[in-house]
Image 1: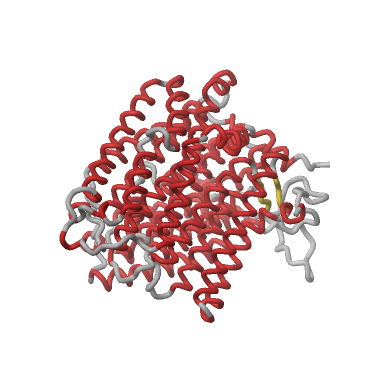
Image 2: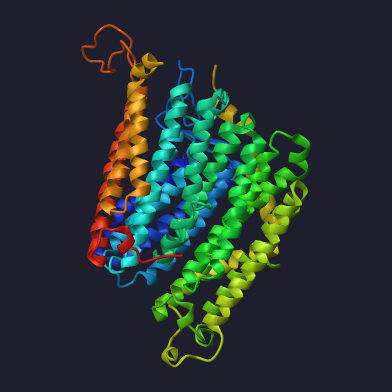
Length: 522
Length: 118
C-alpha cells in the first residue's frame, strides 16, 4: 500500500493512458469487456486519487520525480536545479484530482447508454480516457512545459470528442471553434513559458517561483498567461466559443469539458498564487481577475436569459458561475500580501472559490446530463418545442430542479454553501461585488424557473405522449451527481474541513511549495 | 539601435510572424486560412524557442566523437520538437474538421458556414 501511494501520482496519469490504447484492442473482441475495463480502470484511478488525497492532507506535499532513483529526489546529485520532470501534488492539485475522478466516472457511466448505437465507440473511449489523463496531468504536474503538453492533450482529444457525432453540422463547427481557441491559447502559453525560460533557464514551477524577479518580461509573460487561460476557461470577453462548443458536444463530453475548464482555472491560480506569488502587483492583478469575473457573471447571466436552446442556456450559466470563482480568487490574490486582510476574509474568499469549483462541476454536470437525457428522448434542444415532459420523465425533472436550485445558490444545496462563503468574504473587501453577485444569482434562478416550466410542466404534448424515462445507466449517472450535491449541501462544514481547507492552505503557502522542490539541495 | 535589431533579428522575425498569424486568425474568414494562421503562429513560437537555445561556440550534446568545448543543454530544442509534433496533430485534426464542415455546409467562408449565433 505504501509503495502504491508513493507511485500513485504517476499511476493516476498512466493508467488512463494505458487503458486508452487498450480499448480498441479489447473492443474488437467484446464490447462488454471494453466497457467493464474502462469502468474498472477509472474506478481504480478514483480509488488512487482518494488514497493520495488522504496522504497529501495528512503528510503534506507529495512529489514524484520521473527517472530518479527515488521518487522524492527532486534535484539530481551534483546539480543545482531540478532538471527532471517532476509531479508535485499539493492540496489544490489533489482537490482538482477528486473533481476529475468523480466527473470522469460519471461521464463514462452516462456514455454507456447515451452513446449506444453510435459508430466508432472504441475510439470514443480512447479519446475520452486521453482527455481524462490530460486533465489529471494538468493538475498534478509541477513543470510548466508539462502543463502545456497536457493542455494540448486535453484540447486535441476534447475537440475530436466535441465533433464526434459527424452527422451533425453544428457539432463540427463546435469542434472547430474549440480546437482553434485551444490551439491559440496553448501556443500563447508556450510563448509565455519560453519568455520565462529565457530569463531563468528553469521550467519547474517551484524553482521558477524561487527565482522570480518580476522583471518587465515576467510581466509580459504574466499578461499572456492570464489571457490564454482566461480564454481557455471561457471568461468574458473570450467566452464566445464556450456556448457554441458546450451546447453541441455529446453531453457526457460537455461534463468533462467543464472539468478541463476548471483545470485551466486551476492553472491560472497556480500561476498567480504560487509561480508569481507576492512579487505581483497584487492589487492590480487581483482587480483584473475580479473584473473578468464580474463581467463573466453579468454577461453570462444576461445571455442566458434570452436563450431558447436548453444546452446553450446552461452553457451561458457556466460562464456566469466561473465568474463567481474568478471573483473569489481575485479577492484572495488582491489581499495576498496583507496578512490581516488575508486572515480575516482573504482565505475565506479563496475557500469559497475552491469549494465552488467542485460544486460547479457537480451541478452544471447534472444540468447538462438532464439536457442530454431530454435530447436523447425527444431529439430537440429547443425549449419552445418541449412541454409536459415532467409527467413521464419524473426523475429527469426532479434532477433538473435540483441542479437549477443548487446553481442559483438556494439553501440547502451545495451552491448555497460555496456562494455564501464568497458573499460574506467579498463583502468585507468591496460590498458592491457581493450585491452584483446576489443579483446575478436571482436572475439565474429566474432563468432556470423559465426553463423548468417550459420543458417539464403543463399538459402533455400529443407528440410526446409515449415518451419514456431514460435508460437506467443514465439515471444512475445523474443519481451520483444528485447524491453528492445533497451531501455537500447538508454537510458543507465537513467538506470544507476535509478537502477545501487543505487546498486553500496549499494555495496561499508559496514557501512550502518551493521548499519541497528546492529543499533537497545538500 | 539598428545594431541591436540586427543582433536580435531572429527574435524580431518570430514576433513579426506571430503578428501575421494573429492577424490572419482575427481578420480572415476562410477556414483554410485560419488553419494557416495557426500553423504560422506555431512556427513563430518554434523559431522563438530555437533562437533562445542558440549559444555561440557551444557544441551539440552528442557524446560520440565530441569535439572540444562546452555542450549545450538541449532543453529548448526538446521543447521545439514536442511542439512540432503537437502542431502536426492539431493541424491534421483541424483540417479534417474543415473537410467535415465543407461537406455539411458547402462553403469554407466562416460567414456562410456558420450555424450558431448568440
